[in-house]
Length: 569
Image 1: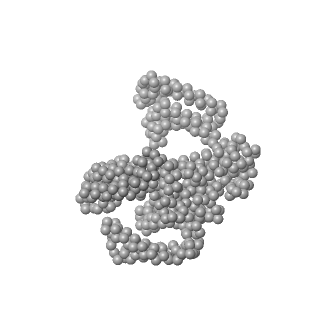
Image 2 (image 1 turned 120 degrees about the vertical axis):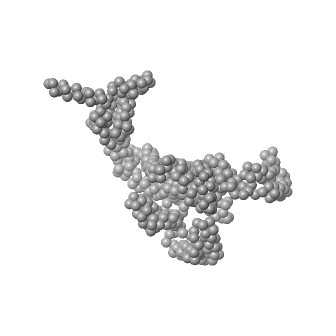
Image 3 (image 1 turned 60 degrees about the horizontal axis):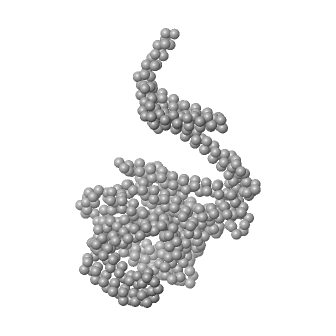
């Protein structure tokens, strides 16, 4: 008996050395009246919710309570007996570090378990997967109806089942294998790239990294061939020599500019490659068109998930370089046009405008507004004044600033409508611009304006000493940006850029307003069909899950990239 009493005394003494009840209560309950009220209310809510869960689902709830008690005991044991483990320390600091945290952990565990049981019951246990049970009169009431994904619509005007509509829209089903091939190519490249990074092959094997890089650079062209097709007109010659010559000259000029800016090295082999690159590509392209292996697809029939991914990916890939150019243009410090050149030109064009345009507009004016419009040449004087006083004659900075601020002041929906209506005006007469391409152009312009401001913020965050150090090394502008400024700026901009990419992806659903049948737009066709009435809930749950998974994937990759590059340190 004496031994037991001594053991208890030693146990209490050991606990007393590492634990003080008065300090514990003061830190967790009695330090303020508001904390005491909060803990009391949280205890009552947790107790009531736990009792309700035990009454409705006793076995799962008791298992969760047992797990919570085990977590609590592991964290307490580590604190009382100084037997620390990584798991116990993490649980103590993140889940049960205080009375409030412990109660919130239990409440959250019970709620998540209840939500999981409800979703499982609705989506799997009580759900139906039979295509014959999609009609409203035979549909289950307690679960989801997934048979419509494989059901074939009895309406001959609607092609295929709801699944095909959601994936491809109104696309002719003979082109579906090409769409699948495009998806498999991107998936294979992504898996190979991830595997090369995970195994270290990307860093250790230069041919592998170069091969994958070239494959990614060529992937847009391959996707264009698969998803759009190659146009062939038998009435035109197979080889247009003027196009061949002009393209070759353009590639050589680009190579010369790159050599002048020290982007590439000069060598006879490089000159030969630049000289034959475009002819080989052009001839191969024309023979591919003549073969008619990839007939042209009516782009206006794109729809569903395919159209959503095409628009989102195109806007993300195109808006970044355009935004980069606009940001550099807005920050440019090139020598401006002097006053003695600007103002004579302003006077000449203003007089010309008043002489050739104003008399006719005044003669046709029907009201005060049209009369004022007739004096539009005055704007030339205002523009000249702004360029000289605000930008010191820097046309590049003036144009970039005007473009960015104008686009940012217009709603996206307005730009999408304008793109569809006004895109043909920028091409020769008779040219038909498919609506998806017009929307991609308008959306890219909108996104590039915001992207430019993000990039400009990153460039301004770089200390001035970095610019001066690059100048001291004798680097030209492109070298300075490529090797010194951009790598640092992009590290800073990773969270903002990924946030912009996620916004572009989710906002792509707005194209349904301008008449495109993307994933959201085609959903209206699905739920509007008499055979699939009342299926909005399943459809929109699925779309919400899809948008969440893609956005969460991009966000997770952003966090890993930040950790890898030690952004913020």
